[in-house]
Image (tube, rainbow, N blue to C red; front, side, top):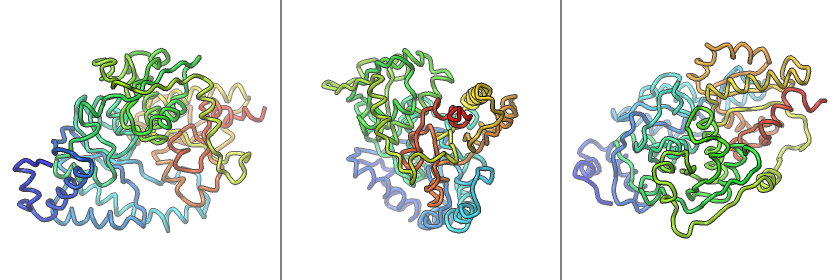
Length: 425
């Protein structure tokens, strides 16, 4: 790797031993991927993936403390992934005991470290930092040092920023020195598509299901998607962005997609069109039967596969303000159709603290809470990591949550029918 004089000076220790170790880490990381150089981070803010104070993560807290003691803080303010706990989310005595006494015992301590290192504000905890209400929305062409997979794929694809699928801790290392290794999705060539995915469904495909199918097929490659604009339009409005948020999260978690292009919609596809497609690109056709095949092959790992659900999570990744409003209307309508006043299964809708704050100022908040639904800033995945929660029959319309936990995937319509008593009819 060729370093500039300034970068070499940091590596040689001219700005201190701690900063030299940070630079060495990034150089070794870049060497592993055959990066030719380091390039400056150009985004206003960073985003960190490590947000949870697990007792077993003592090396992380030790590292952060060494950075603080040496006066080495992030060059950028940053947001961070969601908090793992919220007392408003249903949990029994034993689950709470495990959460508070054995798992997340370092949460308060770690959040204090994050504030000292450069957290944007005390509530900047969300996997959807790019929401307008949160304020960490990169510009097209910005170079990032993020690691959260659903945020990386959104920033690359919908916003046209540039970021590799980094690992945790590497995200803050880049932010500290202000550089990241130049390879992969930072390069023009690395952003070209080696798959053409043709959507031939007879109705609008479920975002999380479509993303899952594509992720499992293309894995870490870049897909160029044709025919999706027929269903979600050719404008990146609130509806399309919410759809692509959920779609992208599924491609990233069910596969390893860090960037996708949607014909006539995403920035680079609009600008460059099929010039983004590599010669010899593979083809994948998705119709109704293919989506049904993918869904039918999801394993159900509950102890009793036909058990009645005891909890429902919606919002992994976190919901947008528009999605909160839409879910309110859909739940109200479904309850009325089933002659119910409140949901029959504890249901949690999750969103960023700043998005929830905006939602609470609307008429929809009181209406949603009247249905018995709980709103929270929690990370459902971190909640489900509790060994006792793994034994619970939990349903979700998030393919990311299904992939990483014991939660069962249901389409949004199936979720609605289940939580509003439609299955009882």
